[in-house]
Image (cartoon, rainbow, N blue to C red; front, side, top):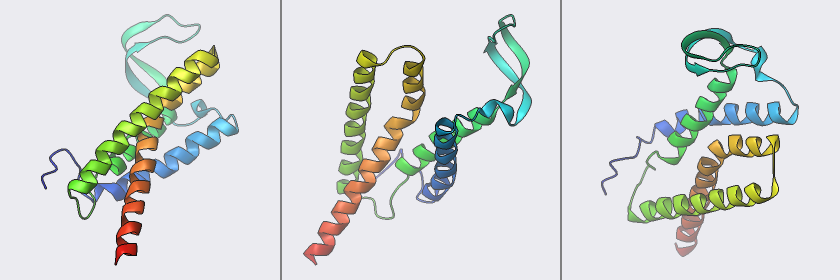
Amino acid sequence: MKTRFLFPNSFKTLGWVLLVPSLLLIISSSIFNVSTDDYITVSVFAIYQETLGETPGFFDVITNSISDELLTFGMILGGVFIGFSKLKEEDEMISKIRYESLVWATYLNYGLILFFALFIYGMPYLNVLFYNMFTLLLFFIIRFHYMIYKLNKTNQDDE
C-alpha cells in the first residue's frame, strides 16, 4: 500500500524522545506553577512583539526566554512524528484505523472546545486554548495506538 504522506518508521522513536520530556515539563510547570520565562533567555527575531510597559514593534530583535517555544516545538513535532510515522507493517486496515482515529480525535477535541467555551471564561479559557494546541494530537495518538493494540490482541486470539 502506498503511504505518501507518512514519515518513515524511524521517526516514531524521535517523536517519543521529543514528546515525553516536553509533555512532562509542560504538565509539571503547570501543576507547580513554575514560570518558564526564567530559563534559556536569548536574542530572537520577532515579526511582532508586544510586552507590557514597552512599545509594540514589528520586525525587531528582542531578548526573550525560548524555553516555552522549545517545549511547544517538542510537543508538536513529537506528536506529529509519533502519529504520522508508518508502522512496520502498514496496510489498508491500519490506514482505516489511522483515518478513523483522526476523525474521532477531531470530533472529541472540538467538542471539548465548545464545552469549555460555554462554561469557562477569562484567563482560564486562554489556558484551555493553549492546551488545545496539543490535545488533538494526543487524542489521536492515544486512540490510534489503542485501536492497533486491540487489533493485535484480536489477531493473537484468533491464532
